[in-house]
Image 1 (cartoon, rainbow, N blue to C red):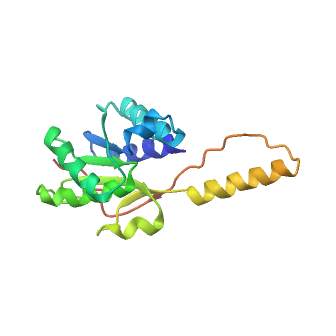
Image 2 (image 1 turned 90 degrees about the vertical axis):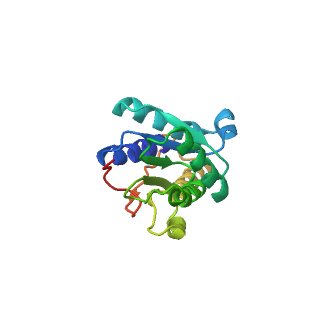
Length: 178
């Protein structure tokens, strides 16, 4: 449930007193192609901003560390007041993380980051990234189970099941004191 996952990212940051939060999304072409996960993640951010009374700020970039780094510099040039980033682009979030010290910002003291990733990717930063767990394997298992049941002639009550992501605490979010 990508919409819920992003909403929970924003809620976590708001609970830490962040009010200026940018959303780092995957490439814009995925949203324009109406890929379900991309649309739901963006909707989650926009709904969370409306719910918490935040001004939405959305940036997109390719799925690469270098593009994330470059984009983070662009974000801070345009919005130096930001205190946090919520990412649906985990690889680019690592690049954003590495761009922050280049701007004199310490994570998480000066700037917080939260992303969405798998457990194997958590060690890409030190401290480890605060994240929402990628539920891809559970989604795959659930879809395969539904397909097998359909192939055996069983009735499947729902054609869509949303799997909620679980938070994994890390060291990249903290109370905003700016």
